[in-house]
Amino acid sequence: MEWRANRTDDATGRRPLLRTGPARGAGTIGAGLWANGASAVAAADGDKLKKGDAAILRFLAAAEIIESDLWQQYNELGGIQDGEVPGGSGSAAYTAALAVLDEDMDQYIHDNTEDEISHFTFLNAYLASRGAEPVNLDRFRTLPSSKATGAQQIGRLTNLMQLTVNTSFWTRYRSRTKNPDLGDTFAQAVPGLNAGQFPGIPRNDGDLAPADHLQAIANTAGFHFAWIEQAGSSLYPELAQRVGDPEVLRVLLSIGPTEAMHFQTWQDKAGNAPPLTDPTNGLVFPDLNAAPFGGEDFQTNLIMPEPTAFLNRTFPAVSIIRPTATVGAAMATVRILTADGLFLGQAPAFFAALRELAEEADAADHGHSSSRAG
Image 1 (spheres, rainbow, N blue to C red):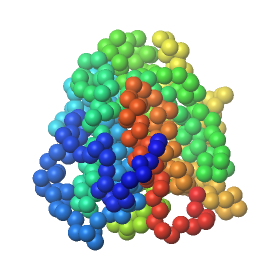
Image 2 (cartoon, rainbow, N blue to C red):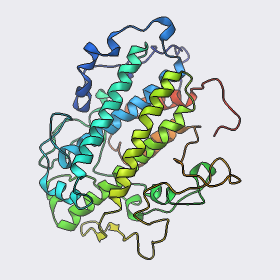
Image 3 (cartoon, one colour):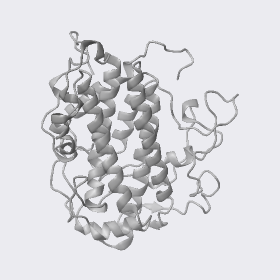
Image 4 (cartoon, one colour):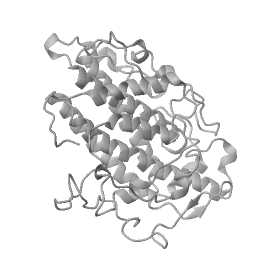
């Protein structure tokens, strides 16, 4: 996108597109924070965030708002309905299909939703406390809700009904020789999920039958959960390498590992997805422990990151988060979220807003760049 010639360099010089305002959906969770939280306190000049650190925090806040929106949709139909997160009224049939992956799926979905809401609420409060503008995407909550019984009928940021899920994270975390930071590519665990558009939630009550169709939707959600959180597992360490303020670094290093905890949980549950073929669209969920799959690259109970190459192939293999190369990390996140189908139906202004946030985050530099940095 084009940069304005008269862009301001300070942390508060933001376009109205990204300014805070009345929140809806997940945003309402943080509404009470502004009266009593850190944002109510004006930052001293010396305590204001530098442009780059503010840009990184803004991009992460936007990413967490997007995550909160999609997790809220999952929780409304398949999670626990209580006062801790915005909820619908639940779908008993969908919740039962998710329980095939694990009997505690509804609790895990609820808790993941609460975590992501807490992340964006904190990041926005922290931005405001240090003299920077919080991020608000409420003007883009225009996508339709599921029509299935149990879902709220409100505007959404994300579309969970036409997902294209890249399941190469599965083989990436099991490989002992490859690393995406070194240019390697990885096989899909569920090739069909990456080759079409499939619902992760029931689109309407017609999706509640036949049983294998509903189970395929639950299986899709299980792999999508892991896909979402593996992206967050990489994003925080990628951007942490660009911050300059020690406290901002502390924020990233404290939130980031929770995303990795989410990923490991969901990767474990996705491995329990029963093999089947969806009778309505032909989507195949294979038995990952049997031929032609099988072996360590597909084994379902290998949920710890296998040691692999890092920095360069002369070093011994090490168990790591991957990728963590920092160049273009924010824009890469926008691209993979878009490729997932999450934003189908969004307005061009939404994509312009995300690109602006990503460009500014990727341009951040802590001032001590190394020629060895990825």
